[in-house]
Structures are given as structure tokens and as C-alpha cells.
Amino acid sequence: MRLDAGIAAEKYVEGTLLAPIPRPGKVICIGLNYRDHAAESNMEVPPEPIVFSKFANTIIGTGQAIVIPEVCQQVDYEAELVAVIGKVGRNIPRANAFEYVAGYMNGHDVSARDWQIGKPGKQWLLGKTPDTFAPIGPWLVTADEVEDPHQLSIQLRLNGETMQAGSTSDLIFGIDAAGVVCLAAHHAGAGRSDLYRHAGGVGMGRQPQVWLRPGDEVEVEIDGLGTLRNRVSGPSA
Figure 1 (cartoon, helix red, strand yellow):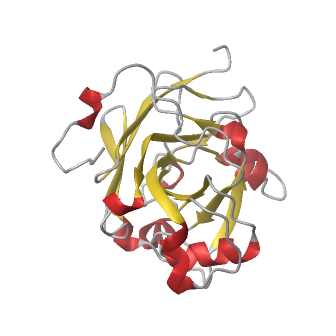
Figure 2 (cartoon, helix red, strand yellow; figure 1 turned 90 degrees about the vertical axis):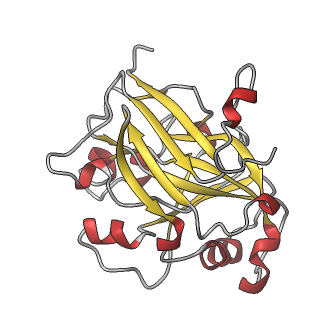
């Protein structure tokens, strides 16, 4: 399906949409990769990509609930562009990086900041990997349908209010630059997802700070890729 601007592709979808890649072998994420987010975090632009990972248990599709665990009190939102790796590779030259991208989709990197940053030693892994903390979708758009993944508007809405609005043109490390690091360091299996991080405006950086709460609805929209929608629930669900 081609998702041309102005076409509400959602009206053609019937039934339940599951995560396009339900059990990725790896979910490789690039941190602090937008200039405005570096600025709002009071951090210098990194000289090379900051790489972390999520697990397959974090993956959910559009319409599924983000469940906040009882032990997490400061849960943040982050809109993402996701590149899906379509074939196996290792030590791929930057000039050939896009040959390994099968397509793109929206992503939402949910983060428990009280674990990621507030715990002694800064528990990034524990703050990033609770169940349901990586919604993706609503679908995968093949790479040939995306003219330039570095020229896409990206925004996140919380209960209808725009909290993040930016463009992938603001990426510090583009898909080919970040991808070459990941592909060189890891065996790139087909179906792997790479999250290329968010624009500025995260809840942690606001005054007062904004945290996700049960009953919230979050939407991540990217030009030509559709809208990823998820409600937030508590542990009782």
C-alpha cells in the first residue's frame, strides 16, 4: 500500500493490526540522535552514535496497551523512526547501508526515567525493557515507497496535544551512519529493527515534567508512515 500524503489509509484497514515485526531478533536503538533533544538534555552532540537495545518482550502493535509496572513512576514518551533490516550482513560499508533496509515504520520508545536515570548506576536496560515499552507500526512501509527517510516530519501527541514535533532532517547520525556502526558491531539478521530516536519535547525535559499515566492516549505520526496509537494502562490490566 502506498501511503500518499492526504490519504487516510487507516480507513482501509479492517480487524486488528499486530506489530509488523512481532519478535525481532534485535532491537538496536540510537540515543541522543536529534540536535534539539541534545539541547534540551543539556548534553553535547555525541561524536559517535550512542547505542542501546530493547528486547522482543517490549514490542506491541498499534491499538495495544502500554502497561506501566507498579515499580515505575516516571514513564516518558519518545517518538521514533524505525528502520527494519531486511537481509543478513556484517561490516557493511556506509555506501551500501540502504541496500539492507527493508522498510520503515513508526516507533515509540517508552522509558522509565526513574530506573534509567534515577537508579544508582543509571539502569538503562531496566528502564527501557519492561513489557510493552516499544510500540511499533501501524504497518511497515517498504523502502522503495520512502523517497528520503531523512526528510520526514515526525510528531507525538499526548491526549491530542502535540508534545514533540520535528523532522528526521535533524538527525545527528542518519540511517546510513548509525546503521554502519550497528551492522559492523552486530550480525544483522533479517527483521531486526533499528530505532533512530526522537525529536525534542520529551516529558522529562518539560517544566513541569510530564509522565505517562493510565488512561492517556499517545499517537506517533510520521509523514507517509501512518499513525501509531496506543493507550496507557496500569499494572492491574
